[in-house]
Length: 384
Ligand SMILES: Cc1cc2nc3c(=O)[nH]c(=O)nc-3n(C[C@H](O)[C@H](O)[C@H](O)COP(=O)(O)O)c2cc1C
Ligand SMILES: [Fe+2]
Ligand SMILES: [Fe+2]
Image 1 (spheres, rainbow, N blue to C red):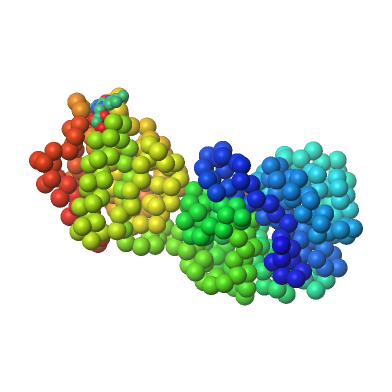
Image 2 (cartoon, rainbow, N blue to C red; image 1 turned 90 degrees about the horizontal axis):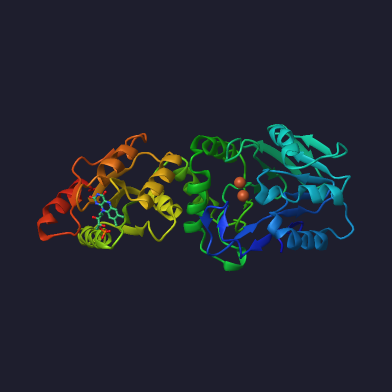
């Protein structure tokens, strides 16, 4: 596959992995991207996950033919990209690895090196000419690992953006970018807002025609759209006015109440998206929590505390350091409702969250008499 006539895609799709990073469901798979820049000093941009070794090695050999690559650029040492470095250095012992100083220090943690490997660290802004192409390196520490760097190829204006701008979904699935890119960003990189901001500031100084990430499609058109999304996500700015209504119900009554309330909010003109936290992984809720400016959480009381699927969602939410959202609470309890108190305690540990004072308590099932309480919550949840 061609990125340009001299830049080839040699990555591979993975449609059989169940959980990315042993945590995130990927119903449409994922791609591990790797590229070859053909030039006087042919350069390979990253390797791939061990699950894709065979396909990648085949693609690589096809593109390289008899050529021995001069450089292997290592943007990121996470094993979904770096797993084949060991193989590569045995296969091409004369290739020089180009990476950040931090990556060089971490390399022996992942691979038993015999000391003959050539590893050259590159500095911020450093340029290396490989013929008609020139690579320029920019450090991206903590996006989302400390050793990450991105590479800008000056002649064709390609930004090799590491995990940045990446998305779940195998290339063969041809998914729309936005949903899975948002789920990827918010869950995997979401916590690292300020490092991402630093990187975006560097990227803003470059004339970029194409973004080549380590997962998902190469982005060529309307790059402003993608950059604007990253601007929003990395400043925790909601993309739109709307409410995520995330619920966790045991026997279905909290769910029923939550869905009825969602309908009422919609009838009042709100955009609402509901998520069943007992059936859908928390990462989908995190994605929506970033997208919208408000959220309502509805959960059962369980063994004197909070029903675990909601607890799990809140743990994820806290870990991503989301801020600046208005939050409403609905609880259910059959003998001693505690869920709202527990949810409030958790959200109040987060910076900049506004938890609506009046919460709704239902006892086992929603009754007609509860209508007023829901109405009060709906009013309080209106966008500011
Ligand atoms: C295993 C289990 C433990 C529960 N623990 C409590 C509790 O400690 N306090 C309470 O008020 N309700 C408790 N409940 C009741 C639920 O909070 C809730 O009222 C009931 O399950 C109805 O809501 P649902 O249909 O959405 O599950 C428990 C329910 C179950 C099944
Ligand atoms: Fe990564
Ligand atoms: Fe990755």
